[in-house]
Image 1 (cartoon, rainbow, N blue to C red):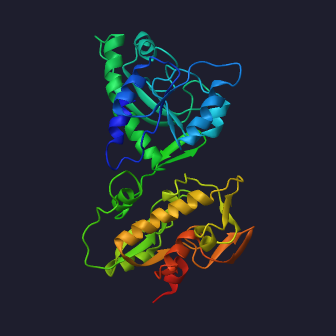
Image 2: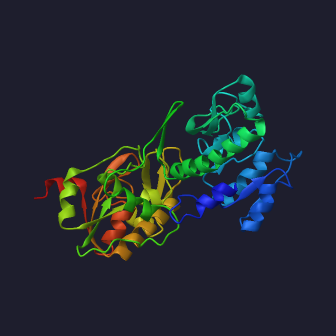
Image 3: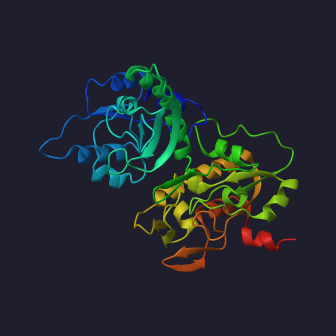
Length: 361
């Protein structure tokens, strides 16, 4: 827990620790968290009124918890938390899974006579240390190793691996297909600027000095993985704009904290203009209302653009955030703008779609 906290102090770390939970009142991690000024919650045992997870879940949701990182937590999670945080609960285990699951993994590795041990960060599922693997580090086993010496060397690697994987996970860089996972960090000339603007706690305006006017561009058109499906929507016509403009990669859906892949969304009432005025409504195909999240993400994106003093924007077509001419409402394509496009237009910032850019001279 302390290692994850130290990583979070990096101004560009994508996660922050908002709560430390334990079912053990005298857990050292609780004492440490309190000393670090992190809010804590001790919830011990089950009661006859409500199971442990059912009591905990609303408290996590009230705090806005989006990801759970288990760290020395020995309780097996059930369907309440696994359902509410599907594929968003991580754990670290001191072995190279799938070998040596459960307790005393280091001792079992020595008894088995392996030459290499290590640690694994994985997604938690209903089994014991059985979820999809996100990252691993290898630790050689020495002939003179004891359980304690091997555990100490593995722990050093755990402290490095867990924070790194959690950081990249919270950026939406992992793709899951069945049990297989793959890491897809943003690449290309705009990747570093994109990360700086969309993640972490640093002031958003550590921008390089530019004499050229700035142009906001939907990040996916620059090759940044799209929130909708994780694919790059790179638009080569955008590249020629970089000769005359300083490009600002912006994604209001990242700033809305939507995960990859996000469910399809459509307007149930109005369009982006009405949503930003507090009158429209957006839902995804799960039936979840995402109006407030999309509105807040759009406001954050607008703040970036205003501080950068952009002169125009090139946005993705038909997106509920970036769509410029048409949007999906009640299953149909209708005239309208997404939230971000409408917010820019209302401030007299010229917006064109990727389709219009392709036809431009």
